[in-house]
Length: 216
Length: 216
DNA sequence: AACATTTTTTAGACGAGTCTAAATTTTTTA
DNA sequence: TAAAAAATTTAGACTCGTCTAAAAAATGTT
Image (cartoon, rainbow over all chains, first blue to last red; front, side):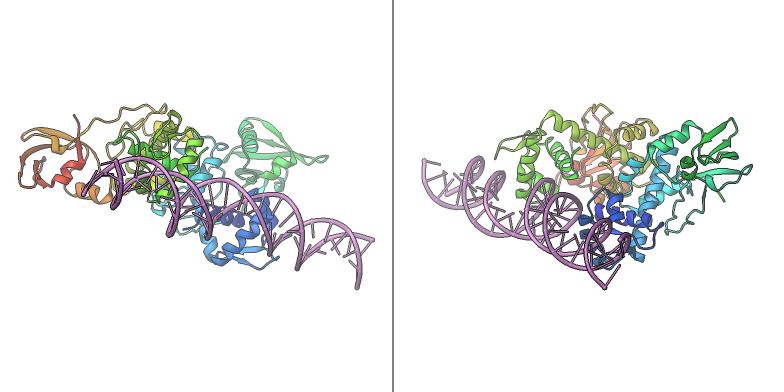
């Protein structure tokens, strides 16, 4: 098996790969809160194990083997988050840290049974898709609220920012997954938006609109 | 918080303390499958942290602080075992290794909610008592089947040996927790016993009888 | 194209936890 | 009670993952 540190590097590289094709040493260092030197060291080890494609100074990408491991960790993370929210009644802004630990529990049989126990959920509490036991899942095709036109309606389906602060804000505004909203105005001055929910009109900043995702 | 290795040492010392007042370096080394030298090193660290009482060459005992940590890990271990058996339908001989990993998940809030979710079980799948959130529990007062007299009846309530091999044997013989048995004969030659269950008569060795526990 | 800046890698060190071999202390036994 | 045996500790070394400082490579700028 792989060490905890290795798993965290692979997961980080996986996530960063969505914005760029090759991930840089510095990006990984920032995302893992560590030094570029430590990252360089670890990249050599991961390359030796054939988990990443690595050429000095050129950034890295995951090999098939590396991606498999990363996806498996993400599967575990998201299933545990679902468990914490649906079975233990935690709020969606409370579960990330716990799932960061739980995702490293190794047993595959355990996670498959957990999946079954919860009746095979397809999305975690933040709307992110949960890979199945073969690692298959459709990467979600969500758009930010900023891309919605005036008078268009849509359903909140995910978030780009997973920070507790952002999630708590959304919770307070009742801008949660599954809610239908209609954009009723865009303020040109700062690109903030007014959206209508079942209850009320809410004024959200450009920043919030950009981190709030809707189904296509 | 404490490291994984520290937690495992404390747990080991706790368990070994039941048979002896002061635990020896070698006992710990054997139980953790490591060298006596490694144990000596670690004992110094644990003593520095005031988690054990340690005088060179004299063996160790847990301080109050050390015992608190050990009991908390045992609480987590047993609650996760209960979860694995009762919610995910694992067999009692399959859960130990998984729980060894899960017991190190740090969140107290998580374990308290898990406890509530399962409706505060008082014993794990092997009959061992589960400490409550304050670390209180009655250490069980069970006796081995060897102490039962002929024609006496009793209820299987725990095991002394937790190995998968032993548990599988008991499962096959239907000698599981909660079952009522009556000792109907003791073979003097090898001290093996014949016990009557609901279904059949079972012949068990002295060794088995010694590792199978009954309620007082 | 040449210099300056940024990024990345290397060098050397450290702490945690482990090991083997040797030294020391305790316990056993003759 | 003194020698032998067993248990324990110390010494020195190793791996993993990290660090800072310095060197090297890539990139940006004039």
